[in-house]
Every structure is written in structure tokens, then in C-alpha cells.
Image 1 (cartoon, one colour):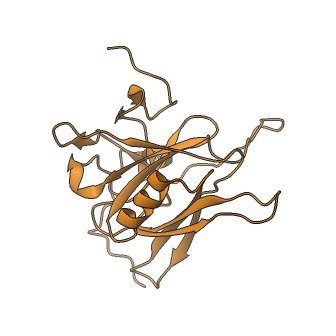
Image 2 (cartoon, rainbow, N blue to C red):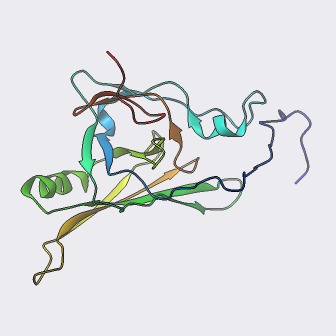
Length: 202
């Protein structure tokens, strides 16, 4: 394809360096936050790849914050220990390639409350905030594409097989599970930082 000289240069590439001995801890923390998309009034935004003034890290990070409808909060879902893995796969053909962002949330139990969540979420459009081990939050869900939630509930069997609720989440996005460092207004902990999962003063 010929290069169009009238197009902006775009964000510059940078070296992807790794310091030998740096600890990389896999997985996610023991919880996520979820909300129905209809309860989000204002969305943060992702920088355009054609912007020359942004670096690679900024391209993957939302700017601004989620603003929720009155009296709405992010609701917590506790996860089974050492469960949960964000996956981002390329899909489609150029110039319309996107990413399919996925995670399976494992809630330890199949209570009436969990089953009620599954009954609603299976037909709803949701957004999930998932903290990595380092506390940085990733977003599954966006304004452009609907989130597909597919729950699976099992009671377990015998005396040792654990029962539980698995909530498979898939959503198309223009970025692999973007980072979010803004404020998260939660129902259980107050305001939490998306940058490190710490509770904010005030």
C-alpha cells in the first residue's frame, strides 16, 4: 500500500526493553468490579494512534474517568484464588482488525445471589474492571461493542469436587484490554485508584 504523505506520522514506536531479573507475576487479584453499561454516563477515552505526542504506554491507557449515573457504583465480584486470566486475540483483516478480549471469572459458589447475577448478565451489556497482580486495572467492555457474558453454574459432585460459578466474558475492542488509572467508585470500598487498587482518601 502506498504511503500518503498527507497523513500524520502517528505515535512513535519505542524500544520494548526488559531488565533481566525483573519479577513478572502472572494472574489477576481476587476480585473484579462490574457494572451495567447503561449506568455509565461518561466514558474515559483512548488516545488516537495518529497522535504524535503520545507514547506507547499512553496508547494503551484510558484518559479521564468513568462517570456513573446518580447512586450507581461498581459492584464487586470475588474470585476463587489463583483463577482468572485476561486474553487478547487479534481478529479480522486489515484495515479493520480488532482485538477479542476475554476472561473467565470464577466465583466460589453457586448461591442464589450468584445465580441471580447470571440470569441478568447473560442478556445484559456489562463492563468489567480487572486488577492485575500489580494492582493496575484492565477494562473489558467499551462503548462501541457489546460485551458477551456466558455464565456456567455447577454444584460440584461427590465429596471433593468443588461447585462454583464461572462467568465467561468476551468483548471486541480496538485495544487489548486497555489500562485504566482513574477513580473507581465502588460499593464496597469507596473510591479506589485504577492505577494501583488503593483506597483514595475522601
